[in-house]
Length: 234
Image 1: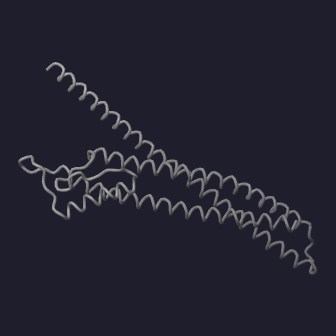
Image 2: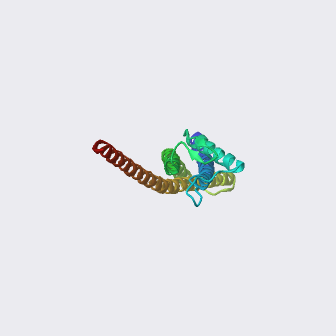
Image 3: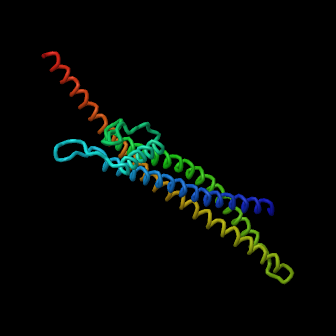
């Protein structure tokens, strides 16, 4: 009985500690994603502000040295964060190796994919913890039932009062673990609920970007076909 009680308490403590550690790791992961997304947003703001600028005559506006450095740094940030290979082909006029709209679409896709992957990974981990915590909770509850049953058979007399007090302490410890395990299970269930929402929003964003990309490709193909037809007729 004593060993099984100690084992139940130890298992509960491990499960509770694992959930607390996982919660910290999850928060760190989302903070890291948030930092990356903030860097992407800042870089894209620079890219959009410093490219495609024309004067009243329709000529490209030349960037000063600080603006050129800012644009080059912004593209480097996007490449480092998103794993892309964009380049500044003309720093003076702010020309890039790809259209700004394409760059922005790809960075938004990176953000959506990062959120989906993080959510999926954490949902899987939380689901496993819930299974383990429920098993640990069942074990603790079994120990509570056994202990209550044994306490019910003890006569309250002076020479056994110490044993009754000791059992009460053990019962309090078990009930405390049961409450903590139930709280951990609830926290993971709410975490999964929140992650599912994040995953759905990110997936919707990814689908929208894919549709825009497909439409752009169709328009480009149509334009190419039209240009080819005009060339042949000429």
